[in-house]
Amino acid sequence: MLVRDAMSTVVLTIGPAHTLRQAAALMSARRVGAAVVLDPDAGGLGILTERDILNSVGLGQDPDTERTHAHTTTDVVFAAPTWTLEEAAHAMTYGGFRHLVVLEHGEPAGIVSVRDIIRCWVPARQQIPA
Image (cartoon, rainbow, N blue to C red):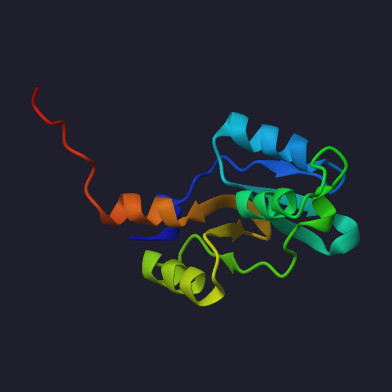
């Protein structure tokens, strides 16, 4: 199975000036654990994850004043839609992260998460008779 079969094609894109609270609210509303940060001044694409927000709050930083650019991962590992899920899982395991931005023709085409991969590898829960 390929990354294109598992990835979410709904990509939340935010800017570097969003506060962490704004980013968290958008991520919560979309029910996603990561957002692509478009920052032309920092080299283009980055990723902000729920863990980045959690780490900031855990350090006592104010989510109403902290900006995403200060918490964005910019050395992102990108996946191709034609990668196998095994390749994606290996990249995540080796890199120690749970999300990969999927690029197609240089543009974000989706995000694949560990949860997406597990959904493909494990059969859907069956209804338990009452």
